Length: 205
Length: 205
Image (cartoon, rainbow over all chains, first blue to last red; front, side, top):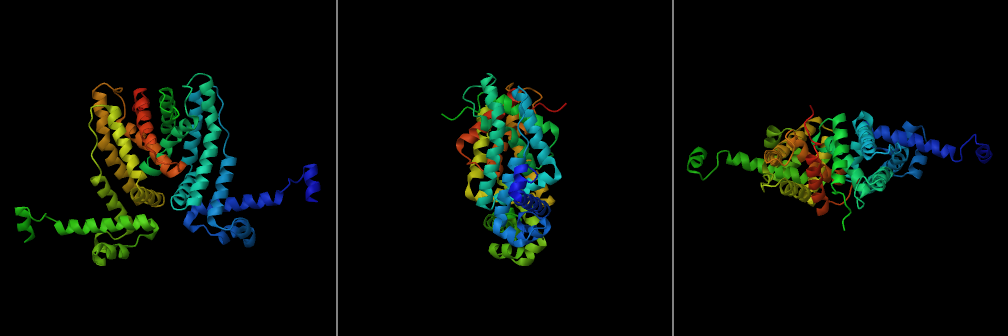
């Protein structure tokens, strides 16, 4: 039935599996936002998701694995990069997207919770590292295109430029505890462009 | 006796009070490094510091107050700014100091713990905000002098330049989970200088 349904396109293959995963990850997100990583309990997540406990224990098995899978999903669901034809405009779009995400009460709390968890758990740190790799790679294409257009030195490291846009925004959220206003996003993008043009992000030779 | 000793300079006024505070803050730091903020217990801190429980409860009263006082002490104990006569050299010194601190296993863990605590406790967040204000102000004088020397546009916001040096290093520690190598420190300083010279950190008008 499922495979026949899949053939005619009415039911996606793996539809139930995907729906269970979506419900469990949504419940994981809710729990992280409300109670942080330390309050993440597999039984409570299963109940909130309306899914059997054994399913959650069998498929994920630990709070760390739930967070790791949530980060995979967050990377997949994130918005694609901009493609305006101008490096400054592309990086302004990236900075504004990052700012909007971190300034959003739910998303900001989620990132704080995951980052706090990564600071004391190596598997979560690894999952977070992969999340940023995926996101940085997506936007690094904007920088690669700018290099091809001759806007930046040829030996510019595209990943470093993208990270430079995010860094001041995360610094405000986590360290200096300053508000994430729109001006801070635009300044982050303009700073990355100025430093990249000055050759600061040349690959280490 | 104490006041007489203070007069002739053999015993500092408040010597015992200061020694108790030093021992308690050191014990607080140890506990944060070993167990994080959630494991911070006033009774255990008192025992580790060799100080009476009632003293710790009376003078600090909560784990949050201990961390807040530790941050005041950390700001006071931090190294003074550089004064090389060159903005780039001054900011390189700042970046290398921040990198060394965050890359140090004990200090890095301490900062992660305090930052994690700030993400779920407003009083700790406020104490952390003040810590960075003090440190940023100390080093902002380097930028003010560079403006006076004509190295930077007159309307440059000195605090923003100093924060720009720290941001990529904290981003590596907390978000991207990349190693804090020396090259990352030098790049952070050079990026801040390039962006400042390009007028990115002009005060919002």
